[in-house]
Length: 192
Image (cartoon, rainbow, N blue to C red; front, side, top):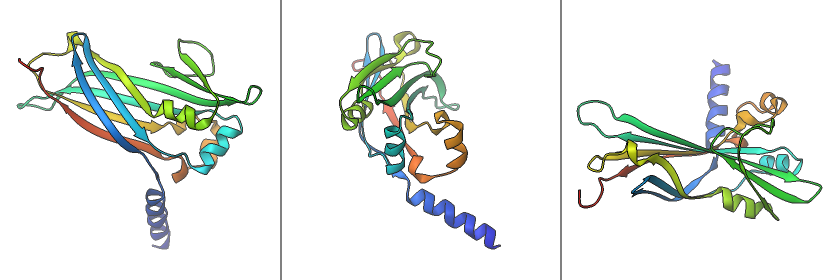
């Protein structure tokens, strides 16, 4: 009984201490070539995450968008998905921060195409991570002009990409929990 109570207390303390992400803006816009999402996030990294970054350990963030077509007679139909993977790392030799972004999971193998940008400070790097602008999440061929859609947006720090020793040593720490999950309704095109 004491073990169960201790476990419940630990879980509740972890949830209370979780780093919060504030989604200050989330917009979905239809365009002739598809559906675009813009989002503005606000969060601060915990001391443990900043310490890991300072020691040269990269930290991974993931933004996900799933588009569903609303149906009155059945559950909503999944129409499209998009993912954006971001890796923040510190380059000690140049004393600069690097942000790598890709639509495919980033790995240390060096394969794949990604966009790399350099910044002079961690706050500048995080400002780029926290801003998603005109991100195409669905092609026009997947969308009907007169249908209603909903968008599920999710942003989180991907602790599964951390080195295995950190994953094993930090099971369930609230300092590494950073996420937000929201739903947005997309109305039919105007005039249709």
